[in-house]
Length: 481
Image 1 (tube, rainbow, N blue to C red):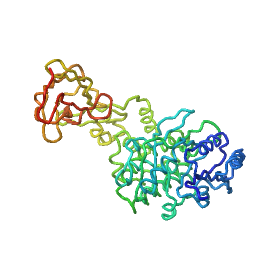
Image 2: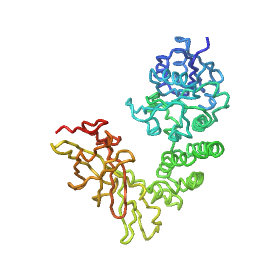
Image 3: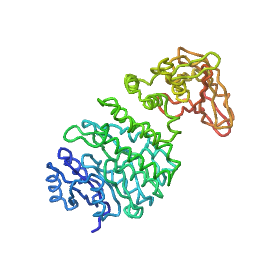
């Protein structure tokens, strides 16, 4: 019988972890599957564990090859796959029981080419959010595409997905040898797919190893590892330039946010950091000018120091970043015209003479506005809110509030200040007569020529706060006193 799903699992010297991985695959709620185990020349007891599963469960198949790395091992497994759908799992990770059932059922329902889901990071037995995949799967969506849902640029792994096998073969997807072989394939699949299903639940537990050999991702500050990562980045950029250039800026921004950290760590920890500078310059030269110019100010400072070969100063800034529990302050400078700069080391240092625009952080200032309480006093609603600017350690100069019913009506509120960041306003429901049942609260904050506007949030929730008019009806309002 042809299985519905084929799962390819390459392994190499993972004896402490492989049993838990294979148990999680055997326990899947979708039991119409085959598990293709690819022994990539293991030298520990991993193969014995694999053979034991093959002997106990007819759905498990074992093939072997000399050690060539995970890419060729995955390719060998794909050649053996018979299923309608195709998935990959790393032998040190864990797959939740209903993961494949959820992903396959979405593909069967929609006809999309691949389905993907959220990832948990397994650290010392505790499941945390994967920072690599953060922000990606907060809003599930079916039949979408990476060019429409560009947050999928952050979804660069192959093992939190299920693919249609005919799609995989039609597109000629194949893993390269070397490290980070999955990143180019994951991006190619996203771009070449005609439809992608995103599910909200966690479908994969990605382990951070605590014993045995460290994984490739845990050796990412090694020079050889960094060179391999750069090869993968260049491969992705070359593909995107040809097939989806609109994704380049997002991909470059992700590299500057995530990948370049390991380059900095290598420079900090190297006894001969100068030897790594040529590789570091190659990294930066690979990325687009727009992403470098629009990087957050503290990252721009790090890149500026890196470009000038100022490794000692770069280490100082890296220490500064790590020492900040909260984000570093943004401060105003200037008398006639106010500019806003990151309060970082070496600002206007006479020796280094770093241009002011490197520190420019105006675009990074965010408005914090949230309703903390809204209560009926007997004659009106009394609203209390918090209004401040993230990273700006000063009281907002002017605050304006108004209720909005879509784009049709705006009702300004009289604002009274209360403490450093508190504001109080009264809402008379009669002023909302002939309006709709629900209104949102807009905030305008001004400090030293900086003006920010946004919707007021509902406490610490991310959703906008909404005022529901009591007693509203289509023929008029009947306010209960």
